[in-house]
Length: 307
Image (cartoon, rainbow, N blue to C red):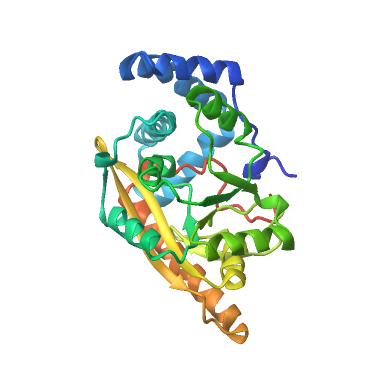
């Protein structure tokens, strides 16, 4: 696998080091911030690929930065520190520190209504904002059945950290590389039982054979077809979920994206083309609204074949 593929970028730091950071977090927010600052600065200076990816992203979002190199670097550093804040929020979320009242937006009620309907569905997410904070919302529903499809190799240490530090089990996680007809049947049953299947629709996994080049922030980027193929196979309601930090609270978006329950086989390709375009447009809208909360630190616009 090419070293520029996001999945080949290994986890930084050891589990012991991360556990130390989590324990420090228990002393309060500011002691954690004081230690996290130098760590994020070191990461910014030491990891050229991530730094270049951040600067490329910011330049596409704000082309005028190319004429202001110092401001460009400072904005990129701020981008990394926002990622550090997101890590702190992630640990706090798994620790049960985010009270339900910190979650705002129409998504809170929309999620409650969708769960109450009992139909289940496929939920499209992206690496923008902080979805772990939604745990505070999901914990309000004791019978919620959730399966998360993700590439687990890079997150293995952090997943271990969360379980050991908080004593809370994660949702049911299925590696996208292990998706098979048998596991697809399990996902179908989960939805029929009123549960939800969550999948990221902004990264091409190592096992992904099908993707499309779609315009995103003014240039073509590769987006996976897998989540949308899965939507046609599961024949269910499809939702769009995001959660972004705004000052000291979080705004949740949970909207009905589409419904493939009655999608004819002959219409699948046309639906996929349209759905992927709509999803990318939604993602771009969210990213422009909250630019610092985009956390894809790899060459996102590089042709996937080159990766």
